[in-house]
Image (cartoon, rainbow, N blue to C red; front, top):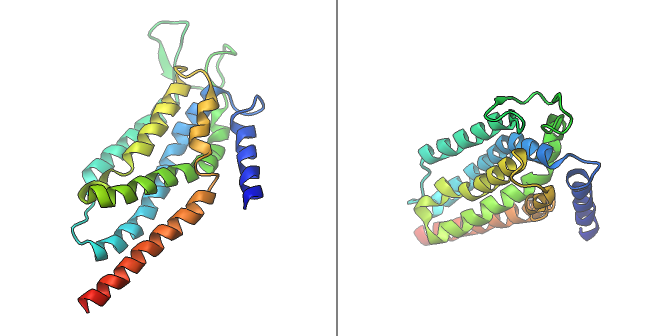
Length: 210
């Protein structure tokens, strides 16, 4: 397991953080385009988890309004991934072509890195989402399944936009989105543990009610 984890992390670092991989701006734009996939997959995984917890704690709820706001913010991030603000013409904003006329303007070719961005950051998104979700179930149960997505989505948008528009100069910050999930190894352990926990709680609840 340790050898596989190290291999994945080295591969991620090689693709996302080395000179042979994308530029910092390309990483940011690819990250913004990957966000709908990692957010959507993590939220879909939350649905059966919510159904199991609902059997144990009927007061739990999901308010769809805030979730739709989150989805809208993610969509705006994707749009901004294709927008370039030229540093040479003040106020000029146009669609990002991917092949800028001036070599050092824009990321260029960032779409080829979207799959890698999904692959290497999905595990960390799910890890952050479900750890916060589990904490909120205990600390603030009525808001847990409505707002647990907010921190990872905000972090992805902040880093993605910062890199895409060159507020962040180095893509070394991407390690925050790659390493914690160790590819998908951490969720492969974390998610079964969380589901087993709630299944055991549900079984105990049935015994008490029965």
